[in-house]
Image (cartoon, rainbow, N blue to C red):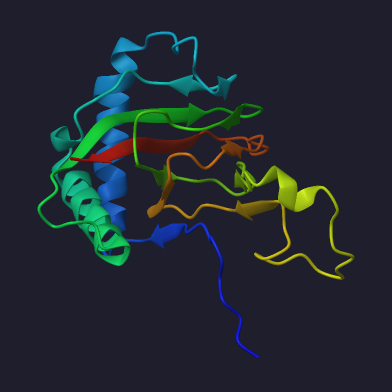
Length: 194
C-alpha cells in the first residue's frame, strides 16, 4: 500500500544550536527596548490579556537575525523557492503572554510564511494550535480510535524554548491559555518572497 500525502500543510520546527544565547539576547532586547515603550496592542491583535509589542527590526538582535535568516533559508530550500527571489521579513514583534492570557484564532495577512520563536516557555503556558481550514473534510468524520495528522481537525504543539515554528501564513492558529504562573515570551514574524 502507498500512502500519498494529498494537499498536506507543513509545519517546520527548528531549534538552532545556539538557541540559549539567542534566548538571552531576545529577552534582554524585549525587556530593555520593547517593554520600556509599552504601547497598547493594535485593535486587530489576537492577544487576549497579553501584550504584543510594536513592530521591531529583527536585525537589531544579531544572533536572532542570523538564526531567522538560516531558518527561512532551510524552509525556502525545502519549498523550492526560486533562489532569485528576495526574502523579506515584513513584520517582527514580541508577544508577552501573562498567566491567564491567550491568543484568539487568526491568520497573518499579506505574507507567505509566518512563524514564531520562543525565548521563554514555562511548563503549561499554552500550546500553539493549528486548525485545518478544509471545512468540507469534517462534515462527516471518520470513526477513528485515535486521531492522527490525517484525521485530526487540529494539530497542537507545546512549544520548546529556543524553537522556531514556521507555517503558511494562511493557516489559522491560536494559542491556549497560559496556565503557568510565569510569562511566556515569543517573537512572531512574517515573510514575503518577491
